[in-house]
Image 1 (spheres, rainbow, N blue to C red):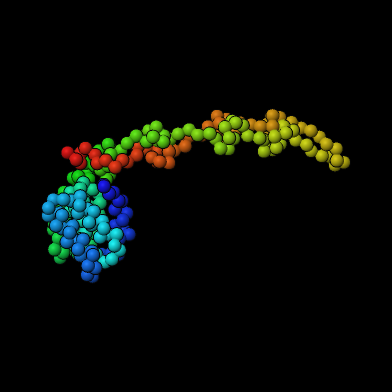
Image 2 (cartoon, rainbow, N blue to C red; image 1 turned 30 degrees about the horizontal axis):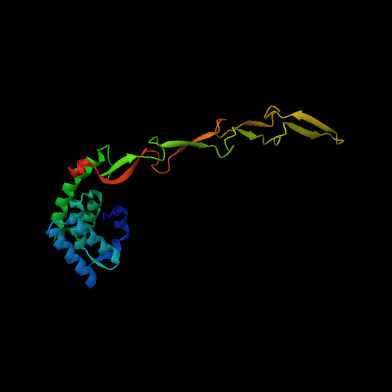
Length: 223
């Protein structure tokens, strides 16, 4: 099963998991397993093993960031790979065993990320964009105005829909005057939808772009 996680955000939340401490036996076994899977070229399996390590919540060896970055690079998750390569450099510094290899990896990642950013078919993570079904690719959709409930009109707030205004003189005699705000109609065109009964709203699923991210990697990454 293909696992996808927004590790660009996860890196922030798991920062405290990395350090110099020794991990538990389960994590150590997973780490050994992941590196063996990498050596065998099975990066998809290694990806799963590394994610299991992250899920344990125990202290992880800092070098795990480097190996995970290499794995993410090989499964074409370039933005996430960049995050973990930077995380390793930050933790290990220039004296780290994999410092130069991390710099080399970042160089390779740069060209991959540039191609993703300039590709109109995918997002910055390299996943293809698909037509948004919610708005039909328009980025917005028309809905019934919730102020006038689609009736195009609002009751006049000045005369309360009566069309006339009643005033009393000093002795209590009533005077009836046509409401100037609504012209005596008791209503006026809805000021929110301008009398159309409809409102245009930005699509909340694609944020006005007209496209949504799929789970498929873009051609420019796969080829």
